[in-house]
Length: 361
Image (tube, rainbow, N blue to C red; front, side, top):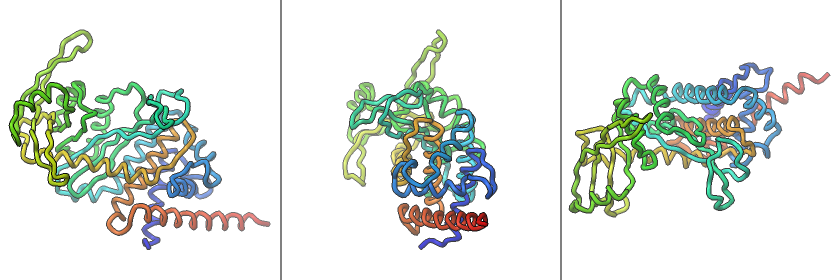
């Protein structure tokens, strides 16, 4: 069983996040993060809809929706950033490994009518008509994997600009970022040009397009090589040129799967270590592990309002981050979540009971 004092400290961090994100009063006489924790954690433990548990879903929705969308999104983003930065300060500053940041999008299925720019279109398979999308930046060092910042992403989003804005904010935490990691969905000329301008080292996994396949076809087994790839784009009617190094690795043995794979990476590093580039890139997969754990505390909602969706997503991410920072070596995520929820329920029930007793004539 987890020490109660530690759980109370974790609940305090969640309370602080909610109050700051939604600009609620830090006062026991008002409804706020202290009370909402109970409802949110009940839904998280059961992986169910917020509207089906507790009695305060309407109050939570009103609290989230009472400010303009842009202000609320900024408040949630900054509060999550602040809480995780504060909680992880020692872990990051005390880590001597190079700082590697992985970027990835994660999605939530939607089943109704798509009438908001925040719902991306989908095929309709299995009843899924659209998806809410979130971009997350996560530290993925050797001994650390931790989301640092997440933002909701609308339809028609400018992915390079989203990443650039995040990197500007991340500069407030890290004096220097050693490497950025991206999967194949991020491979684009526009992002490469943006990253080249920023001057931060990066690795992007390149899809096996016809050009890549042709290059690999001329290589022998286990061969590694780097080629400079020059390209151009048109901006405002003008042709702009840039370049990127493509690292090709043919039929490299993977000890985990005991199979051979071809790899291709885009990078701005001329002297990339081809003997270790795959191992370095695989750190990116830790962000996917984080998303899988977060799915275990998914708080569902019927709301299409991005403010509500984003708040619940950020709350889940903070719950998962607290577990990873302080509990993951001693208990499973589900056990931590259940004990956190039980402790919160007992605490809030006791306070409400005392309040009712005090009001009785």
